[in-house]
Length: 86
Image (cartoon, rainbow, N blue to C red; front, top):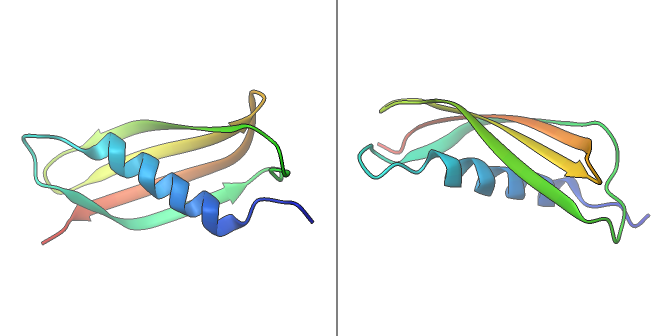
């Protein structure tokens, strides 16, 4: 079908969200919840982009929105929640 596999999207979203939540003075956080909504398929050869927007970061909670786009059009939107590793 030449459509990007959803597992690749989920992995990329998790990497983006984790990178945004890194803070030198706070404990590390790990993804505890990830909801991903696909709005249209990403076809073979499409150049796609992920942008993460942090909405909250403290010692015990991180919330990030990750938007994936192709040619400026949203193809997926994710909501990621992270909690401490301990």
